[in-house]
Amino acid sequence: MKRGIVIFLLGLLVDTCIAQSYELRREHDSLYWLGDWRLPYPVYQFQTGDVDGDGQEDAMVGVIKSTRFYPEQGRRLFIFKQVNNKVRPMWLGSKLGGILEDFRFVDGKIRALESTIDSLYVVSDYRWAGFGMAFEQFIIKGTDKETAIKYFRQ
Image (cartoon, rainbow, N blue to C red; front, side, top):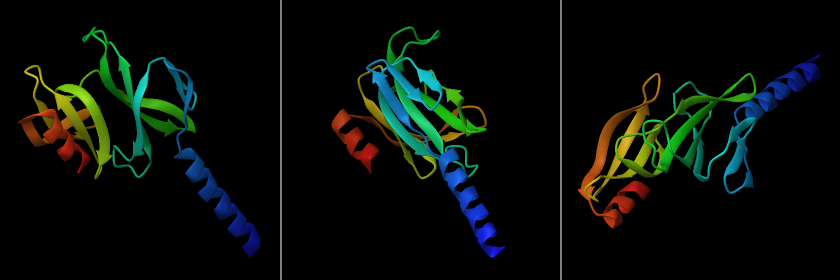
């Protein structure tokens, strides 16, 4: 009886680990797959972390694409969640604050390296706000790219 319970619990642990892992597969330069979700765009960044604070791993994918509101090609942030063992979008962002250069997941927040229209750089933190990302704070703003990158990597 005890052996059956241990195997059952181990099975639950394995299912949980599988359900919370993500695999990004590259078919070619502009076609990727995140689980069963087709991403027909170039990908520049991929990270995982608990974006919405529910205890489950989410996937953050940086893609290069245009949007209806921003027709120029740009770096965008997509966030995905596992629902019933299938990848589903939480947020398909067209823009954060500035012009997105890169992002990383730090302390439950998305840290963004962004450029501005006046050729300066900012590093900002964003947090999940129920549907999409909300600005939390500037780490540094109005600086050159080299300085911004140093703060971004900290």
